[in-house]
Length: 75
Image (cartoon, rainbow, N blue to C red; front, side, top):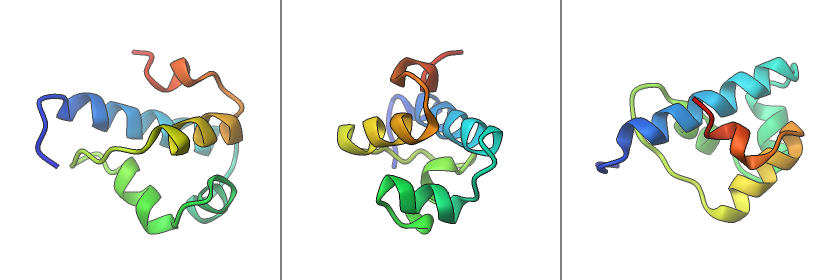
């Protein structure tokens, strides 16, 4: 995805990955709990390309990670 906010998408994905690993979850386990495929999650967490998520998925990710949504956007 080409977007003006490409770096923000990548930072978001890396935050998701950080909290997922901190919770000791594999991509497969986390994706199942969120209700997405692991391949979709791999795209979101990719450090080399921007990939967005819906608000529904965003809230579900934060809930499964047990963090406020804002934590996924902190610097």
